Length: 298
Image (cartoon, rainbow, N blue to C red; front, side):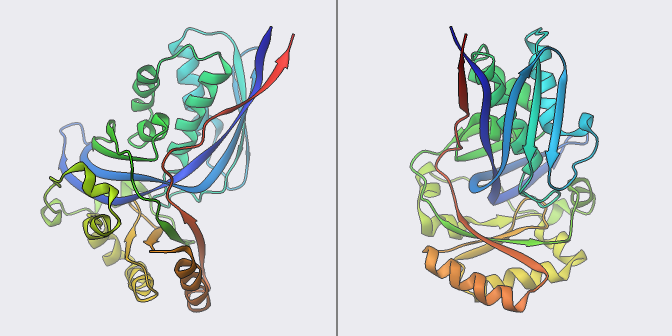
């Protein structure tokens, strides 16, 4: 018979082309409305089946103890949901910075769910994966869905994939500053947040409309506490971005450009002026990378 001996998958970052905070629930969680876009800037994950338990090896910036690692938690949750006694070892190479608003940990979790499902012979449906993802964090369902672009509501667990979206060249600005999501929510003034969007779905597939829609309710409070990020956003506009915004709760920013050459020119100019910020040119994705099994025969 032929089985998957291991599975590799790339876990992409995301940007939020718009992010609106609608209300705070009695539970303390916030209702959101957002447009998720996966971007081609990825962590790398490889899963190997073991006899029992979950283990993880991380190359790159530390994300804390194994039990707090979202990829670890995702694997554990999936195995427990299926009542499975088999184990898995996770090799995780971190490229996406932590606490940057790019969803790195959530992407690792979503990619691990999809890859582990392949490793196990796909016993879980797409809906079952989303149910598990929803228990792990607000952005995890988007990454577990495999969609490249999706509208998200609720806590981010209600999703509507957007087909036919344009591919945008993206310039990511990655300051060394870290901003925790909890910190960003604590300082948020809900009275300053804008009304939810009510637009035809095809608006999100059009470059000009998407640039006009871009907004982020975290920006006012984050830029008040970190004015250098507001200045960096303006510098990205001045360098030719069709729009530039904070991603998630920050501290990363993104700029959307009409062509890759313009994004490369902006990277050169901004790198010279902002020596303490890393700039990466990439692009949005129409779908997330599929898990790739390595087959072994027995």
